Image (tube, rainbow, N blue to C red; front, side, top):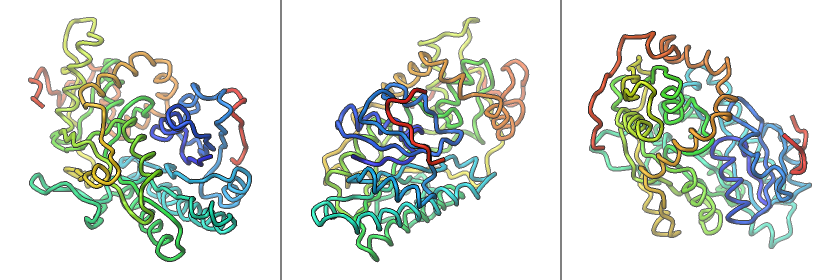
Length: 385
């Protein structure tokens, strides 16, 4: 069995399903079920007897210790995290609690648990920390992608909290001999992503005939990785990654935000045309940039390719179209997560006009510009949602 923390979130739920469907390994799934944790993400596997769900906080060391003793997993995959930069600017405290204190408590529980294992199981045990490319900071256009040895330079409370967690993980390896591996991934996209992130946000606002907010001039660049490719990489690192090592996971799909939003609009024009025949491009609206917005993230994933033989299988264009089709086919899921609290957040973050119907907010539109080339309670698998 493998313990996955944060397994009801976007990446976590995709990983849990991947472990069950592809790797065929039982999963103990622990998630606090904050706003981005959604049991609907687990609906396809809820009756799978190999899946055990527990609602709990990774900062609850006593709970984690009991679960480790009861289920005796061979590995811990830590995906539990507050992960949205915008929210970290408004509420850094919750990011410190989960990402720093939570990771520390999880490491302590893992250290005590491993010490109790027989020698063979002790040698086999792994702690895998899922981190982000944001710890490397913002890169200039001419700067090569960051390799694993690049210095950390986090610029947001979110990135700083993940950097702190990575350092804790490293220290537990060097000081206590805990067999850890760390992965730093680029921006993920795919099914079940909460619509505060750019791709699902743009899709949702386009379909709702609302303004699609783009920060600043839209020139911020991100490398986009399909979540299924990310899951496959995590499994490869877990299987053959060397303890104490870090592996970057990226797809070399660097795209400016504005170009990405235009591509989403163009794809929606094909997949789900507006009733009035206009392009979704007309809904794009520029909004005030967020504080400290990093200009470019890019990572060098050569190490995982050469050492572990992993490479992304999904092309960005095909993966984005697949993702758009998923959201088009799962509007009930979208409606259930875009509640009043979600709308309040969008209005607070992007300005009231960003959540208004498209025709109500004329300022700052792009128009038809050309598309660039570019708490501790256990719920067993037999329980019901």
